[in-house]
Length: 202
Image: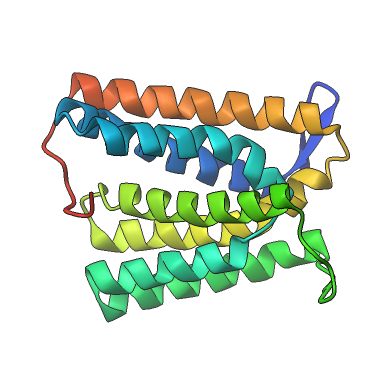
């Protein structure tokens, strides 16, 4: 099954990935808003820069597995064994459901370009920022599920976007509209309904 938006046909798995990324960017916007309210401008600026860089890094489909592992480690460190197992389970299920769509092929001898290396670093750092931001969710169980979805999505979405067979510019535009609007909504909601910073990470 697929959803057709204009001339673009989006499969349900990709749609779920888009929704997950939108939620993650929303919570990141919320976290940035809280940091600004707390006058932590350097970290807020860093996260905002990561959010923008992610628009260009995510479609490259690099660093997703490392990012997923980092997210899992953070959940274990912050919430304990059971939530981390929930995250792992959700991630594996979503990865299994989406893997058929992407058809990864190993290229062990491939040398990454500077842009690809930077994309890998940005994807890794952005996943960490998303994970920290998602801990704003009051329930650790729900947060663990959300992070599991994110971990799978960050691994798969790059290839899923590439399979739309659109130009890079169109990919960036689609992802840019989705992420910037979600970031802005999360930022605005937190600015209106301010609560103290929910984690001690940053």
